[in-house]
Length: 246
Image (cartoon, rainbow, N blue to C red; front, side, top):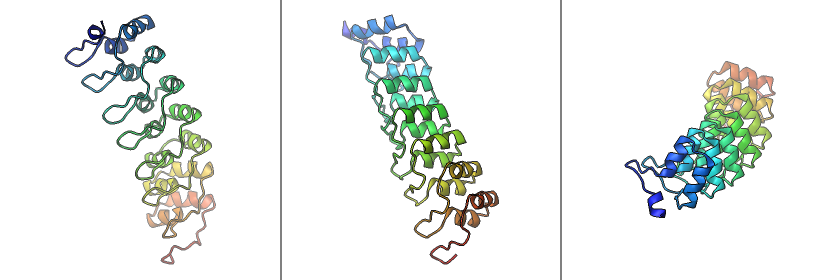
């Protein structure tokens, strides 16, 4: 019986994959799983039935699969879990269901990205908030020591995301492997709105790196006039000198 229920087509889709794709009712999902359907099987594209339900936005199917025992933290070859997929697409309701069923928000893919990083990079504030409210580690850093706040600064994230991260405990003083804080990154990338957001929500303005350069040094070096003005308006000290005496 179990062998028949897991019969796969040329794309390695089983009946459970089809059920997930089509938004099948709970009665069908339950019958398949109780009949021996393997929820861990991946199709040719590397997707489990849960992945498919997430990507298709079928919240009820996600609930059914997890409610009847489908594993929530399975990762594909890129080490992306269903929560990574949901965060990437900003599927807030799905994110919440996955988290309610034990999805691990600290798992990283092979690029070093957590679900929180993905939601930040893609600019999904509601997914960011849902992850933070569930206890996602806000200062988790990747191999380059970039946190979600670094990613937000790099990508020019909206104020809503910057605010959510900082209110959720993001440390604006952390430096990545290159020695840059999120504020440094926002200045160097020319994201004036992010500079305003970071400073408006309490990021320190006069932090200096190993060369004693502050964000104001970076802005002045690059001739970023608007950033210079914003930094000065927020108390940047124009008298600080770096180790070269500049």
